[in-house]
Image (cartoon, rainbow, N blue to C red; front, side, top):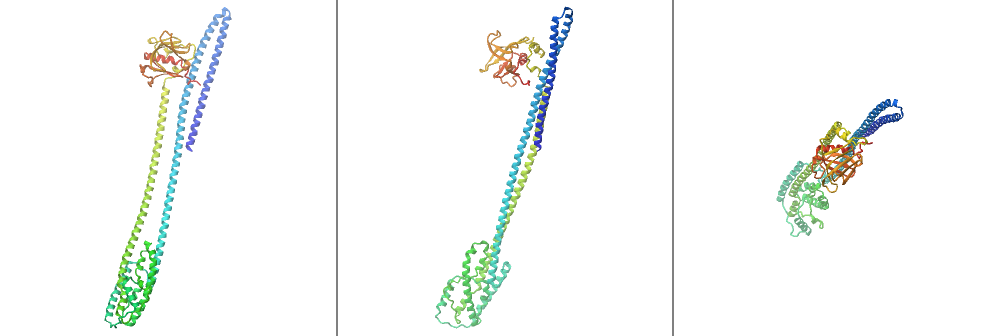
Length: 565
């Protein structure tokens, strides 16, 4: 908004400048018209007095002649004053046009600079908007990613909680209502109790060897032999912890207790067979989940006694000590203790893996936070650097503007101190004396033998460069104000004309300071005459002759119309 106001102000300034220039020109024109009317009245009065002098008697002729002479002097003074005023007006108008052009160019440069600033700021704003939208989209994507990750972790935690609840329920059902020993200290106490039961079992076995035994018949039941063979060929597994107490408490103090023990073992084997089939069905599900490795802890206590699937359990003979030992060894706590010890190692390994996973997750989250912090710091640093660059650019722009203004002031000062334009304007007056004009310009014609000047002509030798073939040849030049031509001949006899330049075609006459003339014989004495068609390069015989020729030719430069309205 501020820059638009500045642009409007500059446009108004340009309009006001044009109005002021038009007003100045109008005032000068009115003043010049008034002087012209005054001069015309004096001319009419002078002509009337002249006619009266021809018709008046001899007695009044002398008085009228004196009056006519005074009027003629007054008319001459007024005509000179009018010419000076007219020339001053032309000079003033040319100066106004030049000032107008300079100020207009300066204002147009300022307008263009402000427009460029506006475009640059708009581009910067659009770039910042795009960057902000990109940052917002990136933040939204990261937020969605974190929300999704959080939901996944919550779902995983919920599944682990459900698995833990199922394990606790199963363990409680197997142990008769006991809680799940998650604490390693409670597990160690539990296994100590198992070791004590093992010792008690060994003592009971020693006592059973001292009891009297009855000899059995050599023929055994086929069911019993097959059962015994089945137990010997299959690998041993472990009972659940809930059943270990009953096995550990079996002591053969009497036959009645042995009968009860055999019945309980039959029930246990049937129960173990059922638990084994369930465990075999659940194994693939347990292996598919790494977080559910603790299920092996309970699964390892099942007896995989497959020999009882097809054959009925045969009761042991009360008199058989072999069947007694076999039944006791089937419930031995050695197997229970070794399985429990291996499960402790598995639980510890699982806890270690869970701790490692938790530590890895924490490390990933911390690295993600560090990356976000680094990105944020990089964005802040980029923003700070951009602000510094913008500030530096503004300072450089203001400094450059000050330098431009200073240079413009210096140019205006140099222009104000420059030589007036009087000598460099064409002269169209019929009674113009070329010789006196050159002498008043400061040239000494009598000492310059290379140039011959009269009231209407100027003659002399110059070396000219050809137009098509760039060769330098000596020609005799004639500047004639009567014919209004600038001609050149082969020699001073002026018999063979080589070319003519009309006054209307001459635009400018200037010194060849850029050394544009091709292979000039003397670059220091080379000057140029610019016309509508081409530029004539000429070499004078001396510096004084060059200055005289330039001042002479410029009086006929009627093609220079920049000073006219």
